[in-house]
Length: 319
Ligand code: BTN
Image 1: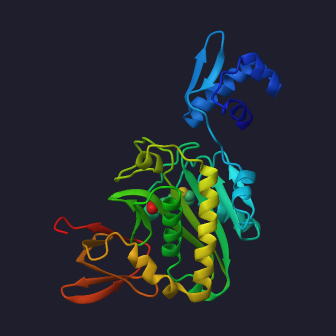
Image 2: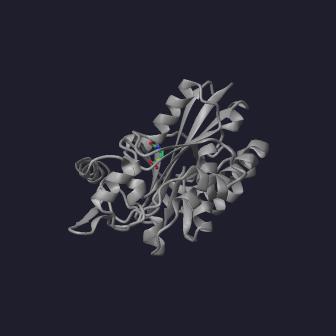
Image 3: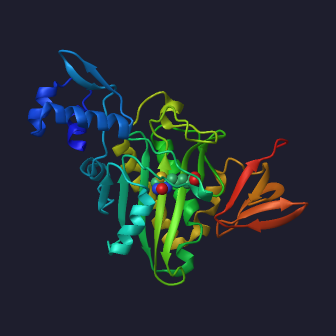
């Protein structure tokens, strides 16, 4: 299917006959594939009598060679899927199959992209980044402490470098612009965290998406913030370099080496918040994080520390 897309991605008109010849298939087979692209991938294709077929907008598809050329230091294998249930799920399957880490799974779209706390992650075709980097961790728990926060910092820095200066962090690992979410992170782990394990660093970044009815919270994208479209291969390359630098620092110095920098970029530092844990709500003021990445809240005048994947923060109306 992507072969037809490869031909159409330039955004120019192509006649049915030319497409058929290039693909070695009949014109009616071309027509069927075009319908599939529209129905399955949600692409809009103009059909003009006498001229042929044209994508409503040109596409730049993910390209491992373009990524490698721009991030030579990131020499991990890159697996690119045109469509997959979830890059995190595929990464876990690849670990199971014995694929040697580190490796990176990317997809043009996800049919079951997963977010934190059982949410879905909107994953339209060729608009955003769905990124799962797999690491093998041998250093025990210390190598995992604060890891998801470190990934958040790397994502934030990549966005800033590409021209989204207002990108900031919200504990534990959301990247926001103002109150709107622009990127999310989901870590999944297999193996023994106290000994040898694999961790999947799942990152979703809203890049060129301009509308969706699949998101039930305030969101934005790099394009909406800047008014311009971004080259996703370049973003993947920049993200890879940032991740590599932060992961090295984390490996050498532990999370405490990064704690202060994380706090400096925490948008909700000092704010009045509610911490939501299932049906429970704890009101407090954000003091910061500890050396393991846990949240420090002042609750009724007393400092308390919270950690755990199912927690989330909301700003209180009076903050
Ligand atoms: C969140 O809820 O904030 C976390 C969202 C994480 C989404 C990314 S997209 C790539 C990877 N694959 C998934 O299925 N989820 C993560």
